[in-house]
Length: 163
Image (cartoon, rainbow, N blue to C red; front, side):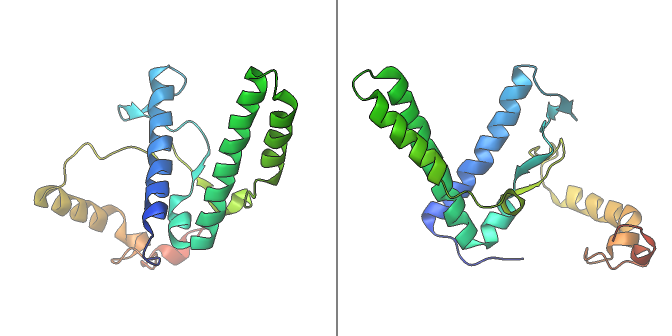
């Protein structure tokens, strides 16, 4: 499904979210805090930010971006409150207000199920040969359930318990 054209800030925001999640997976792997799947860093949690949903829902993306900004503002004021003696109380109040008023949408809208390989890159470069090999694999192993066009309408799809 394609969404409307993205504004520049939206595209930059979605790219930042993707890169942050991928960098987090690599950092946790480098620190030995997460496993490895097929030789690459594994995503350690059951959920990830659903960029595909944010891509097609502009209102949700705006709300999510505003909530992230409000949370960053709250963290910034909390750090100033910790470090400053003069403005400690005022900064703490602003930090609490920003955190409290951050308009987080329901997590079911911006979180999606994840698997350990959620942020892995294909180790085989794209080429005509690799695409043709993938097409043969799909035809022999996937098309019976997913259908020739990948819409889940293959001859065996109706026999599956979860469809």
